[in-house]
Length: 116
Image 1 (cartoon, rainbow, N blue to C red):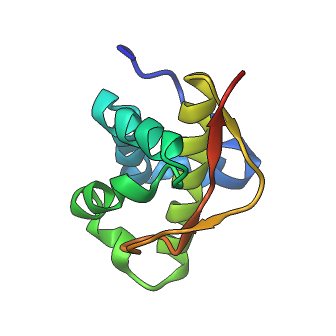
Image 2: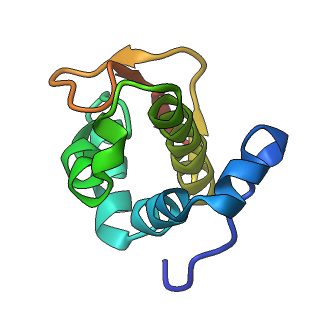
């Protein structure tokens, strides 16, 4: 991945993404090669894609650790971001969620599988 394609926030996140520098930072972060490689490796190991990136997200975006609706909304948006990156890179979303083994930001996250 070299250049970052635009995020498609959909109607639920459009206004928040446009106005929130933290959301834009999150999009850049989940598009970093290293972040994607961690998501892909977690997926290959049967783990949720966002599991290994939680600490990096928490360091870059401390506001995610708040227990409020703004943080919850941003976390949901990050889930949408991860899905777009994973699907763009050849993975398929599996409906449902998998518990995170060591929760930092997320209790559960979506699983993916390689596209066949």
